[in-house]
Image (cartoon, rainbow, N blue to C red; front, side, top):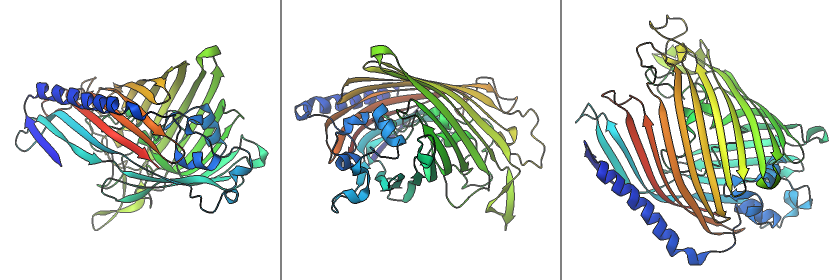
Amino acid sequence: MYVVAASKNNDSGRWMSVWSGLATGLLVLAAMVSLTSPSSAIPAFARKFGMPCSACHEAWPKLNNFGQVFKDNGYQMGNDRDSPISKDPSYWPVSFRITPHWHRENTDRVGTDQVPTGQSVTTHGFDLSGLDILTGGTLSKNISFLLTPSADNTATFHFESAWVRFDNLLKSSWLNVKVGKFELDNLLSEKRILTLSANGGSYRAYHFRPQGGLPGSIGADLPSPLATGIGDNQIGFEVMGHSKNSYTRYSVAVVSATDGNVSLPTNRGYDTFLTFSQAFEAGGLGLQRVGAFAYVGMYPTYGLTSGGNFLPGTGVGNKMYSQLGFFGMWYLKKLDVTTMYTRSKESAYLATATPATAALPIGAHDPSWNGFLVETHYTVNPQFILINRFDTIRMSQQPLDSLTKDFGNLNALTFGYRWYPFMNSRDGFAIHNEYSRVSSKGISPTGNDSISSSVFLGFDFIF
């Protein structure tokens, strides 16, 4: 059940709820300290290989380099236990994950029928996350798979992941081919993100679109264009390779330009994603990694219609969008810092929803913007990790001359912790407490900045 409150100014109430949410999490944390036991990790693979999950995870679901090597090798250890027929018939390589939680969301300036110029809107209450059903492993030697039927919190299902990979082709780790729906080879993975709130549960650089233009789609039910697909699972094929220790990695993926949606809802176009990274040891500090990626695609600006309705898959008049990024993962023993810079651009036709057969609005330009991210984790011990992230987006070129230079600029701050009272080869449990705040320049109905915040206290479990 949700409680909704609306007022023109509720700053004091907002901060009271923020601190009460954080205090509640800390009280729960203190109450459960006596349950502490050695940390492990995700159950399905731990059960199969008889290893603690901490062998692959710094903090579930965040991978360490051993976990990255295991993943790169097609979920194989290179021993007799890799084969599915080596397991007892009662072994079922399936895990379930869901997160019951309490959350509070506030946006300070929302245009409503009662107050068109904007008012503060707050919601809070108990809720459920979606459900992930994960199964993966090997079908045979050097043929791996992952299948993830996933539901939102109303039990509406879709396939989050569904792929098969042919590993070590030509007996080389440098040649692996994956086909199906899969996460792009992001070292900064949104599918293994350690933040879960409405405002903090995604990387802004992967999904930002410029404000002020018209919606850049050609139908009410179509996915948004441009390089938002970097954080989402995509449908296509990937050629990927790595050194034996995964210090050197590359990936080339060609995917349908539908942002992972099935049945070709928009067009028959394709996007391309390329990435490369290199890791190196830095004495006793840990393993450091640097890399770069590029995402280039095209999206339709109009299509065929029947009875005034868009015919799925018939989009034409394609225009380009792109994103280039550089990242570094820096380890200072228990502290790790991830830095990322992105440069994005899209066609003015997409930004203003103008068909390629029509003239652009007066003063229209190809918008471009820069993204910066710094994310830190401090692993106090294998059962307790502190999380902090700051994302910022700065417009370099607006889609229309009528917009101020800083219109839509964004700052996002997220911090919290995850505590694992137990985790073993059968199940795992994390207490997750988080606060996130996002400010966007000038986008409120009155032209003022808009600020939204989230408080999240969740019980994340998998078995």
